[in-house]
Image (cartoon, rainbow, N blue to C red; front, side):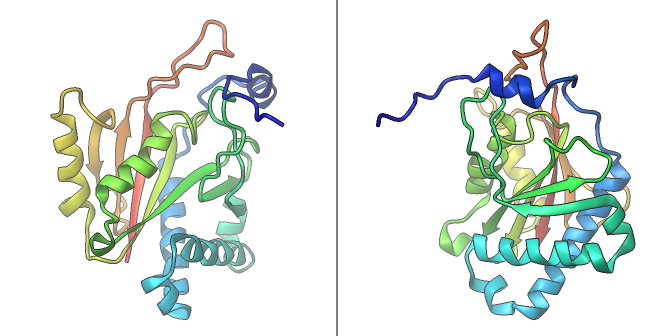
Length: 236
């Protein structure tokens, strides 16, 4: 049987967004920083218990361990358990216009007292220049999915998580890479604000802001999603 052509599916988007006005309200920065701290702590636990996987395993292997640890923390950390309902790896999601029904972001973080159909998304990438896994791949295969409306299209924020194996840092690699991208003709990655550290001082975390060019055609009149804040958490 011939597969269906890629096409917008307004019925899918209409059902997903029924009764909602998009984008959804922004998540408080304090909560985002707590989530970043919990992701970092879970990664430290995974690294301590499975050092070989963290050092040389696939992205899927590391992320699967991280998902398990984050869900275990729900029973061990009362505050995390109040903030988060569950964390799901590879949960199928729909693109902004319904053209794609089976997008699979790495981690979907379901927050308490938040719209259940639109979890906080975290996309993960290995950074290892010896294996050609560089900041270019991180942006082209990760960051762009948020800018094109594949992931987190109803939200105002999302996470990019890097499993760093080559000593790369946000200031040393990502900031100059995005600064150079802004100078291209045309500019790349729709950067509005380069990555900057949070006020809380969470280690290895920075936030950048990017414009998005797609529109919410299901709303009257069609509306822009506005920019998205990407929290970059680089773990090593």
